[in-house]
Image (cartoon, rainbow, N blue to C red; front, top):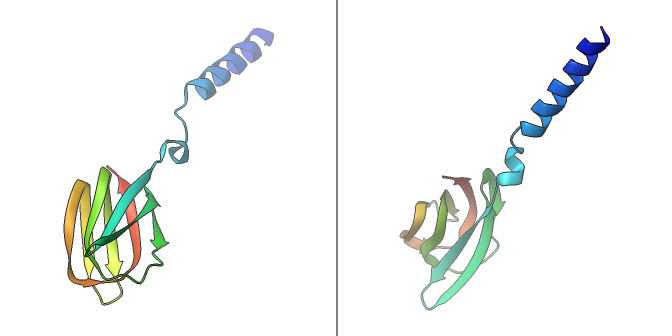
Length: 105
């Protein structure tokens, strides 16, 4: 019985050690640049699908991602803009962005 307990404990320890890290530990933040004519600003977004507010009143006309995620942004006047991977996408019509969400690829 003692050998069974030792073997079980060793097996559980090995499984716990070999288990992958929780998803949260592997998340990164997508770096997004918003363009409003000659002006731009950058904001990072978690890639866990959470919705993040964008508190900038500029009329954004393009959104660029450095890559690694699919991100969707919601404008204050109803626009929905999705950027997949390392890409730059036009926002139509230009408008302030209210929020965004990203998921790792």
